[in-house]
Image (cartoon, rainbow, N blue to C red; front, top):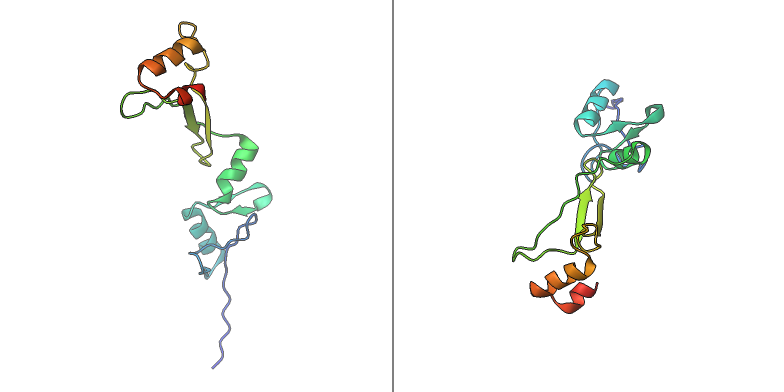
Amino acid sequence: MVQVHTCVSVHCDQCRGSLGSPGFEAHYATEDAALDAAAAAGWLVGPGGRLWCSACGPVLTCEVEGHRFSPWRHPVISDGRPVLSDYRHCRRCCLEESRPARWLIGARPERGKSTAAGALLAAGTDVAEVAR
């Protein structure tokens, strides 16, 4: 017996990937069921009703609306020595940014670069590392 089945699948308008797992395209009985599954999987609806997967959606949203960055972080190495850069990340698309540590470039008037370099050397930091 031959039976005809009509179903709905969801594809990203950016990368053309399908909703489902790798190597498996999910099929749904109705458009509403497909869109509910896409929303549950983190898919977004972009301008003009375009569907974006959970990987493309955050990146494209940040391109339009800008990033949602965390505050700058000033990590410390486990042995107590300061690191040479600060970092932050976008809470939406996970983009990471770094910059030279504020104390290293003299942003704090009481500690210029030469004072900061001296502190690193006193803490046992390698001279080549301080020069970077």
